[in-house]
Length: 184
Image: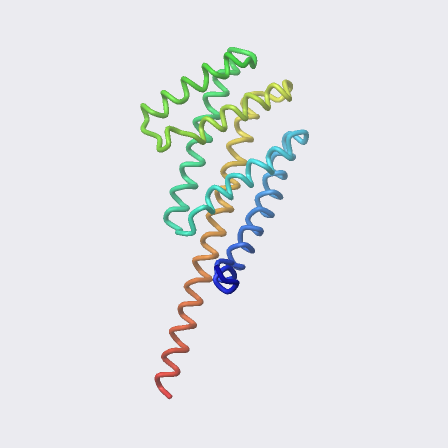
């Protein structure tokens, strides 16, 4: 393997756009959560960044919209099931496992793609945050996790859209250059 072929793999624009997405998701995730529950503000930043990065896995705008939708849908399902669980029970490991089992079955019945892996992640996160911050009401905890996922997914989609616009501009400029050279 030679040095030029290694260098060609580097996409500076992509790296920069990912950094922008992480920065925005970190800021807005912490802001949304910190506004309502300051103690878990860093968790909000982490979950928003995770959502943005998940959405950015595919640079195709249509696929990113689909991934963002699945992220938000899964988060909604997981937060809802966690909230229902916490209405009746306190956190426990056996209770968490039963809730995960029920959530997985529900996602299978609803034909949620990947059987709702995002729902499972959210369910576990909400339950573990409840264990860490028992004074945080379950409805607020679930709503915060949903909001963080939505913020992160939205930022990820926005950044993919920016990359799409940059690519179209680049193509348009190159077409104009080629057309200009042909006229000479």
